[in-house]
Image 1 (cartoon, rainbow, N blue to C red):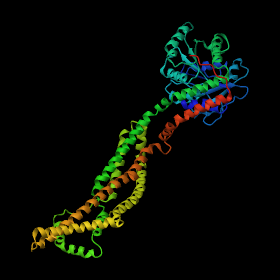
Image 2 (cartoon, rainbow, N blue to C red):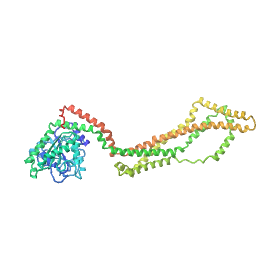
Image 3 (cartoon, one colour):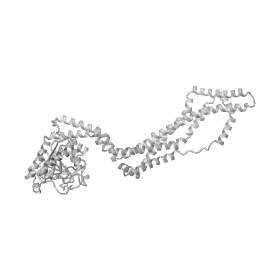
Image 4 (tube, one colour):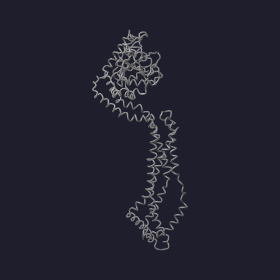
Length: 568
């Protein structure tokens, strides 16, 4: 309804459409007598009144035979409805509309100098769901509404709800209650006013009755009792449609107020879809968390980063004395020979076997497969609950998984390039920072030498010089060296852990995160209804404010007379 109001009401006004002709739409439920009321309005039996409920299935416009009305021609006018170029029966069930010309000789055609009269499809038969979009287009176009209800079904839920919507949109309405006995007309009008109209939003509403008339009386709306009720109807149309420029301006301003005031309601119709979209994104997010945890658990915690072992050896070598001090380092190396031999033998005996780690590639592939399988299962499990889940399930049946894998491989290539640089840079920094700081390096070397000398000297002092020094001196030198290796290994291990954390962050930032975003957005891409929905939701609020400003500027520029306040 909101879209029909904009493209058929506000759009033509902003494009400079003349105020005449005004558009009068006759709406109501099946069998209420809409076509009969149309004949009253145009003064001749041009509309196909038919006892078959729902006979009129597409909008029909009645215009004066003389001249060509200024017809809106902007893009999108009447939405999907296409104009028929040849006369066609009213029961053609297609998204079309047609224009019928009323002969100029009919005295009742005077109304058509200022109005286009629309006979609309009904909204209450079993097939009316297909007619409603056609009805909404004309309702959005109309400057005046004639709402028709029979005495038997004057408070049916669907027509009453539609009348409420029209009044909320600011459409002036004439309510025609039909088919009752003439003696009951006043009572039914009073009851309808109390039970229906008084519960509606305030608006310009006039009620009148057209009691049951015989076929003979209906054969000529300009004669007999038909003329009496027709005159009442035309007078009400004249009251609501006087001063076409004022009426058109009032119509457009009412539409604008309705749209800006109903922004939240417009967005609310999409809340179910938005909620389901959020659930899909939550499923994707949970899958991403599982993927990241599995990568960390199965790969990162056991990854040795051998490049750091090489960096540790390089670091220990840097701490050895250069130049003349190299002789001292060599002597200490010789002294520690028994320790090295014993350590190597014990290491072979008691060290657990070096279990090869699983390569990164298979772990990533398994984690991705589990992620996609989880999403596929969630979509299949809920495919009968909402079209979005059905859409995702159909995607998995076709090529969604292949698209995701291709996206994943692209992201992994970029990740591996970044990771190789990260590991190499961190490992080199372990010893390169010392190489670039001679003062700090020499301090550490001096400290290591002091520790070795202090350990050896202490063993000699404590044990006095003797044969036992052949054991104590190598042991002291070994202990001091082991302490240095332990400190160096702790520093390198800390760098190794930081690299694991950075690698996990890189995996999230460059692989799982972008893939999760791609999967989360997939239902709203490729021209789907969900993509259009997202665009609409972001554009509606600012677009409505722009529309309001454009209407205000147009009315000021045109210098149209201010419309009188609407009567309740």
